[in-house]
Amino acid sequence: MIASREADLAAFAALIRKWNPAINLVAPSTLKDLETRHLEDSLQLANLQDEPAGLWLDIGSGGGLPGIVLAICRPDCKISLVDSDRRKVAFLQATIRQLDLKNCTATATRIEDLPPASADNLSARALAPMDRLMPYVARHLAENGTAWLMKGRNWQAELDTARESWNFDVVVHPSMTDSASAILAIRDVHHV
Image 1 (cartoon, one colour):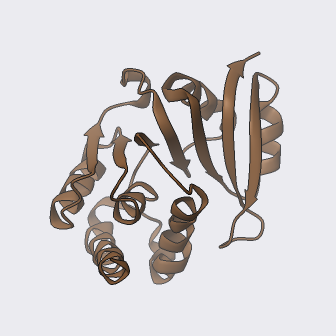
Image 2: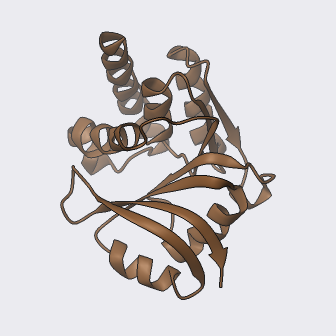
């Protein structure tokens, strides 16, 4: 199973490198560090959520980071990828077919147009500041679900701004790939 997972992650990295010049899935300057900067970063979610169950919704999926990585590492979990860019969704759908990820789907739609998903887990990486993400989290997260927001160096300021309009519980997990970044596990979200 682990060898298969590593082979699938390597195949996914090759697909990103192949498609990136046409679609810009990741910043071209980060391609040389794709495995550490993007794949290992995304792998953190699979390691943090011990027992994912039900639906995992990845919003603003872009190049499939972390959604495709989660689908590879968590074959027992249903992963739904959503992005408004049809070209990126075409890449995601081709990747899902090529890697035979039966637990994963990709949909081209705007997050606000998606019917409430009642997701057990929701993830977003490099999508928007927290205050703009919180309405999506509130709309799509199940009552006892967890949102996993992968935030960069300004995570504390984003967290403070989001708290001005939203009440929620948060656990801060330091990023293993960037000491100034964090993964925020958010639960019990309510508008102030």
